[in-house]
Image 1 (tube, one colour):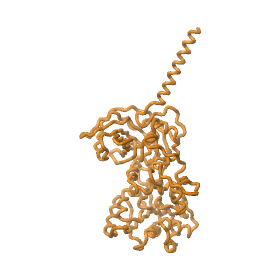
Image 2 (cartoon, helix red, strand yellow):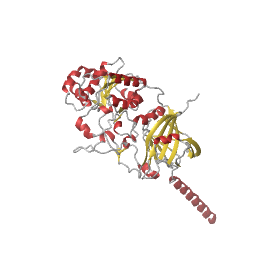
Image 3 (cartoon, helix red, strand yellow):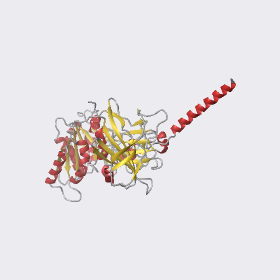
Length: 500
């Protein structure tokens, strides 16, 4: 009997040891690529979507379009198709965890005359749930937008403006100013450009300045009068903006404004992300983020327009003129909406775009070609307000939709990081004798910057294009050192087909 008991104890210990080793092995398993599986219960997340991990299989793909990217061969390549499934009652969250690998293992491709490639590892489509979104353009006839710019700069922004303005019934007035260098646009040139933009579905009108030869700041402030003069019965909100202001979602703007009564006096906007700029220019709606004037306030500003124009001749900027007029002639104070972004921060802006926070506006995208917001936002046609939405795959990979795919080596960093905090990738600008180190008021909570290619491998968005079934996104990592092949990751987004 003692002998039999010893055998049973020994067998139990062997079985227990095997189980522990299996769990340990699974927990330390190397990722297939970008998405090591989660061995334990998911905790401290805002949203969890359970899916079944699927094996990879060979497939044949036509990759002729790769040559247009100008990436040198050989290169590593992987792709995945994502099917978007609108889920009633689901809200957009900062981060959704998926217990599934995102991409199969990458495959090296060499230059070839044959565009059809045999990929050894392809994964079946991945279904992602998103909030329900409108399939057609929203009715924004209650809004009117105004900007002052040159005809050339307007043309540079034309496609970006069309992304959010076209077919929404919102109206826009653009005051065409003379460039600092060069000749003034002719009436014929202005008329042609207006026709081109209207053909793109935009209700836009190009006009000359009220007073020729006036300063830009005066022209900017004159937008208050230009827009209010052209108001209709349904005009409720008058928005001053720059030619490099971008609104990712008209639906989100309308939802934000829906919190306020346009008959009352509201001055809504965002402040600079840099505290020194707020201290210098004032607690005001910064123009690049968009200045939203309710009909009630616009009526008052129109009444005192001539007085304000005379008084504000020393104002440094057009948005400062608006501030001086509001503070000088009304009791209205700024209603601060932090999702309206002036984007006065410089350097690497990854921490902003990878924060999971949905922006109501973006600015300064023209200053750096790394932020093609018109292409970045193209995926919104498939999944609604999903731009910059984050999905974490396993414990090592995070997709910030339209900006990056990030892999955290071995999953250690992703497992310990607080994704509720924005990574401080931007250049810091401290303010002397201020408790605020620079961006507390705008970007908090935040966490320290990670070292690229060591603590964080970032595949940056480079291109997006409509394809027959939806939208194709391309993300690229150029290699850790010279001579390393680039890695190209491709996502094909399409909507789930409606049941017939």
